[in-house]
Length: 527
Ligand code: NAP
Picture 1 (tube, helix red, strand yellow):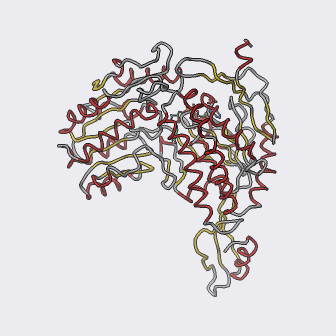
Picture 2 (cartoon, helix red, strand yellow; picture 1 turned 45 degrees about the vertical axis):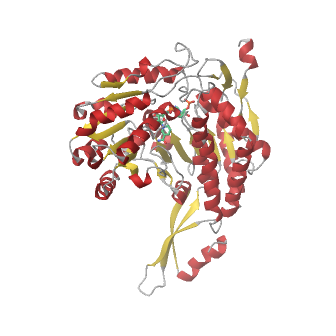
Picture 3 (cartoon, helix red, strand yellow; picture 1 turned 90 degrees about the horizontal axis):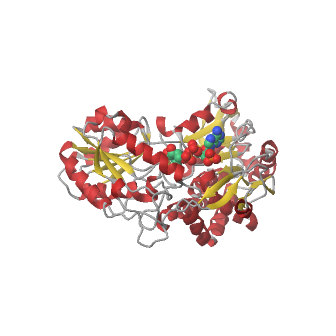
């Protein structure tokens, strides 16, 4: 170990009520602009079975002893602690993720907002031990026997494995519904950007706002994380489809039927209605949104627009409009006030994105060439910066890669469609996506698109001219709305208000005489 390594910040693990260091060399986290080492994360040698048992026993019992409303109050305290420390989090995001302040806010403020939302939602919930599920139904002709469905908090823990692009939001959008449900959390942030999640958890543990065992953190390699899971635990994963496939094949999931939720890759699309081909407010709204989605967080968003579908007649006009807006985007060091788009998360990601761009541009037109953009205050040989690209695929039926390869960076591909049926067919070539957005002033087209796309997209985002200013954004995940998508997108469901609690509850049918079933509510203090 060099002197520099020895002086480096260590991201410790918070398990079994203690701060535990790894026993291996660990992985170094770097500033993506300079390559400077920032911190070291290591989970080698952790007693994960012991850590999990401790979380289940202490955290689970303490959380289940509280009512839903009391647990909601805990979430409000968590949000307060994070709010009080937010300046520090922006500094960490700048150094570790290379994001401009606006992009860091999506992660940091998005996490705090989601916590606050679940705190408010949970405050209105009654009861402690279960949530009712539907009406009681008679099972006997004389009504002397009936069934009632209830959902009770899982008695295990929630292992939350997150992707590198949202170290804050990714943690809290999962942890908020888990904790509100009464399930203790073990969080495993992606190593490359684990510093922010580590700092947040360290602040919360120092503030002692959560019961002991409710929140644990493992930083560094993932070896053994799934081996230590047990029946009753829940696994919630966000990351690539390849990693999700590996986890699904793990014996705890494949053989023991452990519940797993997966949020993975997505080739999301934006669709311009035929009525907007000649321009106008809906056309402009798509241009605005496409540029925003390509550039926000340098395109490192699972929900980003990757494919833009427009009527054939609008292809060139749309290409010119987006390209001219992209030409005005300044790219480089986020410490420079003139920079609008910072860097990717690291050099490995940079190389992966560059390889993806080269692969997709074979067989595409280059409508805006990010390779020609000069970086501000950043050395292209060192910094993980990639300027925005717009490719065009005039024959999208015969460009399979454009529907299949998710380049996790600032790139989208423009595609012309013949008619609405063709547009929907192209949208479905994404094999299941998180979100599709539709831009039109034609109510019938908007409604038909919603119904056509809903089975293959977790969210359909309609943008008509009167909503152009106030809509929440194609790529923004609102806790009120479902997040997830079928097929390629992982097949999972998160958020969507109280729907998110279902993952952390077990549903059971309780059969008995009606008078006895009424006792359930009395026993649990629920109505
Ligand atoms: P990744 O390489 O799949 O890693 C995701 C997480 O899994 C990381 O915490 C990683 O830890 C961990 N991991 C890797 N191998 C594992 C294993 N064998 N067992 C247990 N955990 C393991 O994905 P990423 O590169 O961080 O994120 C980019 C991808 O995530 C993109 O494809 C993007 O579309 C997707 N994403 C999806 C959503 C969504 O909501 N649908 C949101 C954000 C991102 P290490 O970092 O330590 O390797």
